[in-house]
Length: 57
Image (cartoon, rainbow, N blue to C red; front, side, top):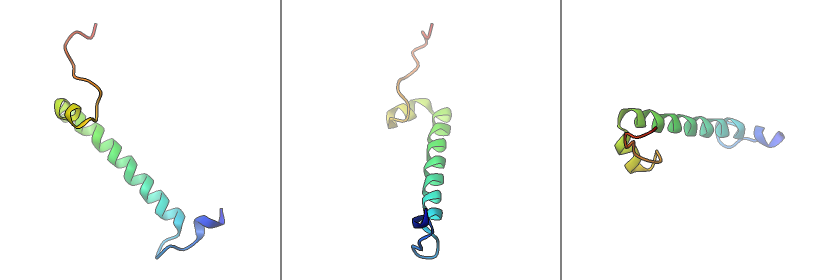
């Protein structure tokens, strides 16, 4: 685990990996929040699978 402490600029590699993972997490949550606001547009963007047709039973 010594390679995570190796310096790559001002921060160690482990910190940079953690920041990238957090950014991906927030991006995923943001896309899901967008689908709550505008479902049809989220389907058009490919964030969700299908449109609601009204006959879920």
